[in-house]
Length: 615
Image 1 (tube, rainbow, N blue to C red):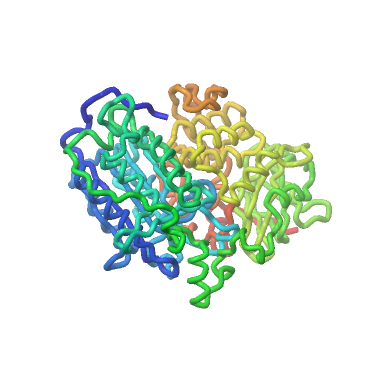
Image 2: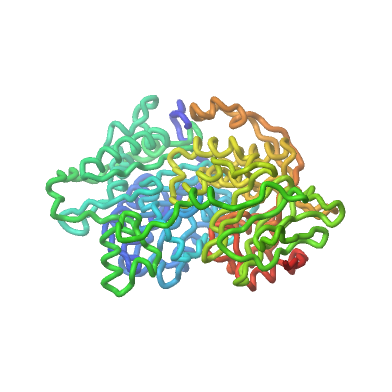
């Protein structure tokens, strides 16, 4: 993690702006009202104004916070001619979700009727195209998902369209998130709703205003920096939540550069507001805290009163003993019935759905094997054995198609549920079972247990077996992207090239590198050189490949679209995808791995000239 800087002055050029957005959604449809969300946003806005930021307050006290409203507010600040932005802070308080690999979602006022949520990571990437040097994200919202919350079928919306310029490097990123995946945060009620305080926001604001000595840098007297703020939050928030019988463990990933990472101590002198003491726990026993999550007892009660069951909205809670628990992802993947080899040395085994056909490019073929409609080998028409990655559509009996890639020397096992592919694991030809690391990773992905707080070590764990199962490389790339670590994603891409393996499309996409299609029909990218850096954790220190320099390289990409559904939201980044591919995003089902409805699959097959191979 970055250390405190030794510089005393602010390096922000005088002609560049410091802007902030304080978003508070307390009145989201069909969910408990959160007065604390409004209060937190007002408090952050007041601090930003006093600290010299150009700040906007966007809350739903008098009017709902809708996508058009939020977009208009953002575009007004980002408008050409308004001046370059050095630092932008985004604060959000309200209801939220975490989906897949660090796919954070914020719920606006009309989330239920629109079935739409703010895609936090994609919004961050869109801001890259506006020349912003630093982006800070403060989120006081739940990050847990009940087991089948995908039934909500929320569309992840980035709010902003493509920006005016190609990203010039990656902005520095600070992230301070109220709760880890799988947990909720909460608000402590005051004497009136105007006094309700979201616990994380309350602790944060006490620090930002300079009222807490433990939030100050130990190296720079009088300064609060990214790293000192992060250390303070990860210590103080859990301690205060324990007082109320809760467990809130925030995530802090401070990465603003040394000498330009100040939140207090540079700029105008601040006169802090009066913060009342946090009430004793016994005073709150008869007053329920507001829990900022969808599957809280309070929200479930409110839904049932409106005649909407939890099951209808996919809000079943694993804590409810009346809910029949389905088999775990790990158990289902361990039980997959798949061959150990195909003569073509590539293919797929599908369980949970009947396969009607496979679609491949004209120079490849697919055949059902051994009387099994769900075992298919994939090869090349000239040479039989598959020697290059091949895009494949697996057409299911209901007309939906799993959009995936056949890889030389790998057999892919696809687990299907109601809406398509919930899991995909690759294993080398000849191996009896899938990688245990891949099985466990997908199980944790389904349960929302890939911890943002330990993203660096989580990504290292996944990367160790990325050559055994390319899905692991893709998931680790999403984790790195969530903290803006572009260099680590490019190191992953280079490692696949060095191992003579094609780069998973998701990795190439998140690496933000240019691509072109060669005369052989393969997609290739030019991987830039990456400089060496110091290891950030003890685990990184053990593995030099996490921080070593890598040279430039030209490498082959596996397939022409993302393996995971969440990758489609990034397809408008320049360099890798075509506009026609981006248009198919609306045809995706809610499945975790890319699955298209019938019309979307038809258009995709036409776009890439795929041919159908029925059994």
